[in-house]
Length: 483
Ligand code: AMP
Image 1 (cartoon, protein in one colour):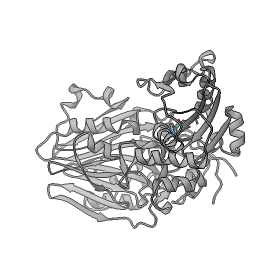
Image 2 (cartoon, protein in one colour; image 1 turned 135 degrees about the horizontal axis):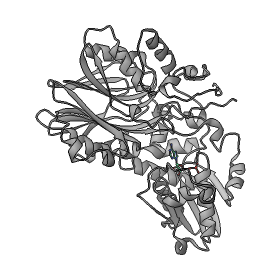
Image 3 (tube, rainbow, N blue to C red; image 1 turned 30 degrees about the vertical axis):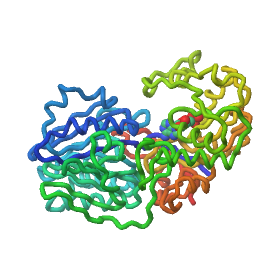
Image 4 (cartoon, rainbow, N blue to C red; image 1 turned 120 degrees about the horizontal axis):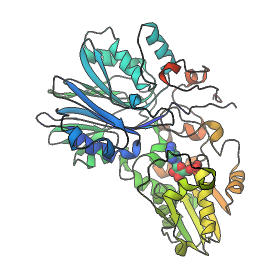
């Protein structure tokens, strides 16, 4: 098995769109994006149209730091889309922030994308041959470029052409001067929901984006669906044929907000059941269950409920820390985790503790957490993870790690237990995970756990390097085990 470095291609994003004739939508998009902030913290942007012109404001930073009354006020229009973006190191530059703006036959459009395309290299090459120029390293620009250069007569058909050419994961919002268009890839990798408020349609990445603006959930946008919302209301078309639904299971484990619903299931309850199942599969003799907050908490509460071992808060989380950009010097190397979490010493001292987290990626955080717990005086640590070991990289939009960086790559659970220095370690099984979700396994993508990639990733494996260095993209090389 070889290794694949995909440090620079992942996107995790939140998108929000609304069509509300007679209203100004910028403020509502601002609130929608705030509810979706967990999906991306590095840049935020809003594009609105008043029926004639599109205006965009975007910048690096959290939604609340990018927008204020002064810059929201000029964004006048009744249709709009918003985007909050997470990028990996190196790509966090202004020009990659979204929505992107382009024109088709003189008509403006803006585009916001959550997901990751897997046939970017061939499409980019074809587009460059046709004379297209790229300003960013974002795969979203390829979609914009395909629309821009389409030979179709109208923008709707140009968008359909572009969508038919792309492969991978995409929940997309496109704003034209008079329409809001939503498209979801035929696998439905990333979530996307339709809501309504006062007769006006809203599209959001997750239902928590509807809740914040008091919109009623209508339904999920179907995989392969092409939705157009304009002055005539809502039209839907199944544009892309669905071979296999494969919602990202990691959305349910970690990424989506616990108050959101996917496949009509509340994420908190699903995670609670993951914890219950974990307690059945991997019981422990212990005095207390604690979580690694916040992502481990629902499963920890579930573990406690099923095991009858009391749950208590073992850490206090500092909620005001974002991603750390300053590389800490050697003597304060561990500051990253300490900035976020501090153990409640009196609560855990002298006790045998079950520590529940949702996942282990590289093991760095987990190792520091273990050290912090021992320093706080715990007697035993039984680590329980409410997902199976992460072994294969995600090509469909979750920023995880390169394959060699996964601690579970080529290591047994016992190896990892020793590395972390805990008394016992157990992960939830794939079958247990499916049971906790309560939906058919076939409807999900489990690739990060079992290497079964629902959309062919061979193009990602067959080239040595992206040929787009002029866009600031770093070199990527290598290959992964093919299955
Ligand atoms: P580590 O021990 O360094 O592998 O970190 C484990 C922690 O990373 C867990 O608490 C997870 O909730 C968290 N985690 C899992 N996936 C991601 C991701 N894609 N981005 C950021 N954090 C993640």
